[in-house]
Length: 161
Ligand code: CO
Image (cartoon, rainbow, N blue to C red):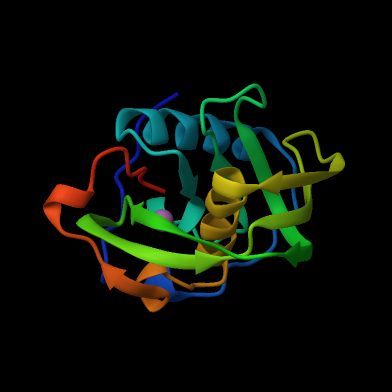
């Protein structure tokens, strides 16, 4: 396990459509473990592979709830519904926070580290975090969706994805 260097904006890898994972091997497991260590080290609630310089469809989310760490490999959005407006930050954009409108509900399909397919439903903040990370895999950054940037006195409790 190791902490990897976070790629900061601007960097080409952050705006690239990532490639699907084809091999569920030891290298993938090591990468997922390193992504976890890196996310924890930098106090994030999520991390996508391009944020450590790897253009593959791998992301993790951990909002410190009963689900633990959600590992999403080759995730697909099955459906979304509703709407929520909330603050977001991103590990690749230090000290930049903005309000982003997202669906309030999402259903995804993804693979876990063992190559087993699963579906997951999420609402509210978890849905937001999942959608933020899946956007990363398509090279879409939260700054392209910000309706308003936040001032310093509005940052209390804002999570970094
Ligand atoms: Co991010």
